[in-house]
Length: 115
Length: 115
Image 1: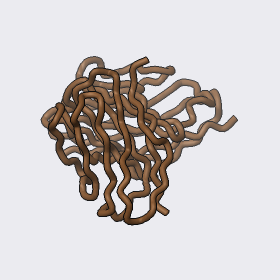
Image 2 (image 1 turned 90 degrees about the horizontal axis):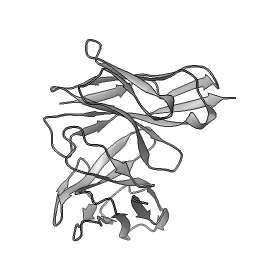
Image 3 (image 1 turned 60 degrees about the horizontal axis):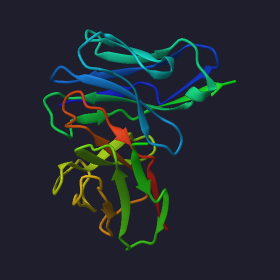
């Protein structure tokens, strides 16, 4: 069985300061991990994904995430927040042993950007 | 532009009525999915289809039905048997199965409110 825990339901940062959104996972297999972003009343968009290649993954809009197997973590970071980053962020784990329904979504972290 | 189109964006339903949500994609993807999103709950899988004329139940299929008569279309019917249908519904597609490295492409969602 697999699971994913997003450690913060809300994160608030000032514009121009670093962003850290935390995600821990558990998986019986070598997982694939994803971060998706959702702006209000919109669908989700892929930010970045880890699929057993480089442990530091760069995504769109300046975001990156580091896969740490020893800590079972996949935290999302950005050096400098922008107002347009305000959104809901979802960490997702994919179990390679599973089928088309092998994705598990975290409950989301709401990122608030203060001017 | 290729993408996924969901309609209607907003829908109101009286208790006891069935309602059908439309999902169309022109990405030539084999697999399609329906997710339900509730505040603070992440996404939960309702149904998915890997190929035309075939579909499988997800984690919360009770009270819902789907069909996949064409590759491009995957409509979802919310029946009167669904006890708590008010939610945001998201349709997604992928090139292949998601048990490995597949990425989901999402529509912009349909918000259903039961009056």
